[in-house]
Length: 511
Image 1 (cartoon, rainbow, N blue to C red):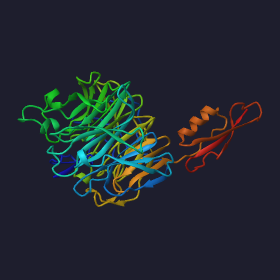
Image 2 (image 1 turned 45 degrees about the horizontal axis):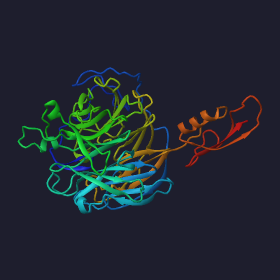
Image 3 (image 1 turned 90 degrees about the vertical axis):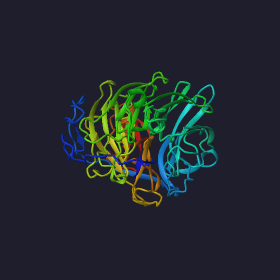
Image 4 (image 1 turned 45 degrees about the vertical axis):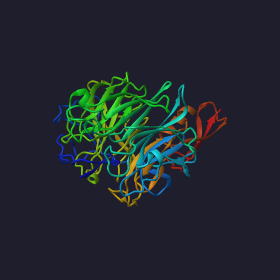
């Protein structure tokens, strides 16, 4: 049957067998779950944890909405105050939308400034969903580089004919993107998800090409080029493949049709890669030498009864905790636990599951993509919108806020043409953007609740305001005695107020 890989890649494969939702060792009424055991071993938390079932404590303020209409909206990436929104192509769509670029210099009025990666010329028959952008300064290129995944828009979805892979663009001027090169991964499918990382004067694209190792095999005995590949794109006009890895070629495990690399991220130093390996788990690789990736470990939830649908991962800023999302859901006829999981990866060869966040009422839904900034995680959750979690205590993630856009209609959406269906979320500054497959781009923020900052030093007051999603407004000074010299003596609005964006709080400091 036709299934979805991350609601983006249509391939012919049988549905995964699932064991339902009744998992022993979990307290169903809690949003936090510490596994006690399961088919893959026992678990001992490395963090102090206390279960919580608290609902979101903060509301969300919607700043803007832009619906480009047309094809189904896809992945979102924000760079230099511009949002880059991909799209999902399928037999119901025109497959003509391309990557839409919106200026967010005024978050309350996103302005569309460009469209690129339309399926014309060498890109005919493809659709552009995944977008990653980094600033690069190398011997061959200086500017902002975008890597765009290219997949087949129409049947056949295999590797026959046309272009597959990824393209590189110069987006130094967001209003005038310029194509630099195309990497064609024929004869197998294209880049389902990819990652772009810059280290010094070098840049690399890490890409997931599902089922390449299996379907490219010439005889069913010899593994083909693996699903995970590394390209040196330091000269983006002339990319060069420098490494690859797969469970068949490197571990001797012949994958079945449902085992493939779905996505990949790296750490900042590009010495580690984290592969979301569908029906296998999240794989940690040492890629210090990109030409020779080395397997370190594989993350598995010890209490998960069904095979994992490892979809996407993200790291906390200290790179000691990994957030994994798994994709299940009734939309795709996948039965299983579509919840985010947090792992302690400080010991890379012996990672441990810390907690799993379950959203009450979402047993037949699924989380999709994660992002982390500071101590907050932003999760797109299809029909449940964007969930913002406080993960300052990874053992007990706490719901902070949620945003659920109203249901929209897009007949090109093959899974839910008349509902809320949020694909991705991306935090930027003190707000975040989200893409709904049916209704387009949304800009929102966790509402400012003004804290009491009187008596604090200005630096501490600014930090307290930022933690409360407020901005520091005009800072004045006046003499107000000797007891609070150098500290805030007046604030406006008062503590507890909820001013609208830009949520600026004016301060008066005792001089």
